Length: 245
Image (cartoon, rainbow, N blue to C red):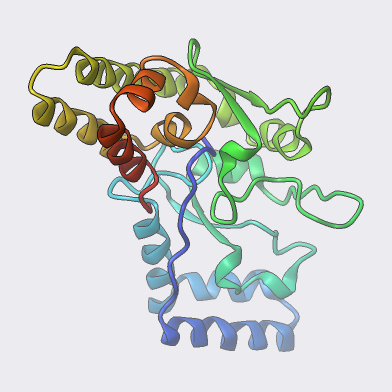
């Protein structure tokens, strides 16, 4: 699910320079796609992919769906139409084969030319999406009678976000987090149950804990009860949930 906010790490200077040189070379030859293909076979190309995989967390989940392991570098702004962005570090995402196929060269923009697809390394996706915690379904956020256009386009293009498997994955994390939160409220052995909650947050590859910590889910029980009744645990939960991937 494109619901994780992924912190983009800085790229080592030698890799930045290698990308810059390739961009210059691609401009000279005019065959950007071929230059990119050649670059991916190099040591520097593999190192860039490894850095993106590191940003995805210990299981290197796809930046878009989080349900599958990332396999390759995807250009947020596609090479076709945005050749000048082909070797820009900030334009790279690490995605699975399925999401790469759905995304392909699609890149809708608004009337000002701004992207209508959500980039999880640029902003928190929950700003545009809404989670139904009863079903695990992600929908467009309602902006007071209109649906958020970035969510509309993202859900239309990245179809993996709405599969049964994706919804079940979200539901599974919701159940585990809620159960751990209920144990905290039960009040027995607070240190132990807090450790359980911390582990569930650490195992959350889908960004669900962030939904409960700082977005609409903070008003849903059992998390709302922790927020209002146990401030120390709540502060810890927010800290764990907003960690950098």
